[in-house]
Amino acid sequence: MKRILSGTSVLVTGGAGFIGSNLIERLLEQDNKVVCLDNFSTGKRENVSSFLNNPNFQLIEGDIRNPEDCQKAVEGVEFVLHQAALGSVPRSINDPKTTNDVNITGFLNMLTAAKDAGVRRFVYAASSSTYGDHPGLPKVEDRIGNPMSPYAITKYVNELYAKVFSDIYGIETIGLRYFNVFGRKQDAEGAYAAVIPKFVKAMIKGESPVINGDGYNSRDFTYIDNIIQVNQLAALTENPDAVNTVYNVACGENTNLNELYEILVKYLEEFEPEVKSLKASYGPPRQGDVKHSLASIDKAKELLGYQPSHTFEEGIRESVHWYWKYLN
Image (cartoon, rainbow, N blue to C red; front, side):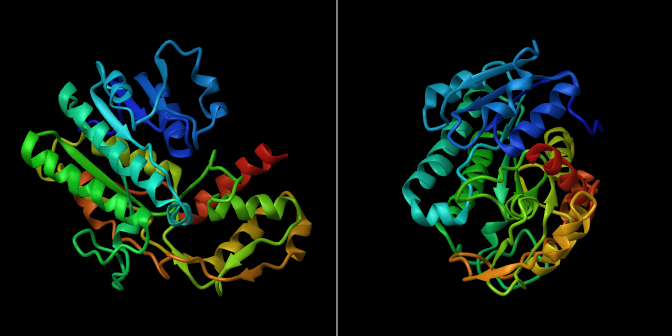
């Protein structure tokens, strides 16, 4: 079985975002024709600017909430890697309607367009937030709890729609439940910045990062290169048992926020020895956050051949090096 996409045509929705732009970069390196659909509401033009002169790259500035934009984007493509969404639990609590419009209506528009165009496979970004209040660790795909935020609801609805479309219309779908993805190009700015770039930016500026809660909340942080790998495996698998289902995508190890802070100090010290003198401060816990998250990745290993290329700490080291160059 091929393990990388090469010589084919791929649509990446949300391609100007953190995950989408990393996918596009790799796909172009591997000699694919790539279409990017993005409305730049959260994606950045700088993330795709280096691709604009590549003859194998096409940028469509459009919105997944617009069915015509979705139909235009899927013309002639073999695979869809659907990354477009409004992320962030706090954002969904502050504005549930927009989160619903993008993540559910937009998803349905893309799924319908892909089905009508006869694409070979629709691979989409699902979320570990789907596990909700289920207390079991590690998280196993067929055991979920009640959603704890509007965002979590939208991502679970995506899975339900994908299953129904597979059953009724025969379109092949695979959902990838990402666990706390991090790495190069992840946004360090704004109210909804993810924890790792937010911490790194503060520490590079000589400021103490603020940890929500007591610091013992833990996450299965997953480096971007693992995400790139599994999207390609999902697109290419020829195992009939591997399609029309969902997978955890993670490292299979969890790290609490206090440990994260210490590991960041360790790698930032290479560039800025004074970072050792910083002390983390603590704020109130965030509403809608789960306490612990740890994935079983056995299903993805068995059915897709997934093997994380980077451990959490290897990913942190690469990320810190990238942010140091980017922020200085």
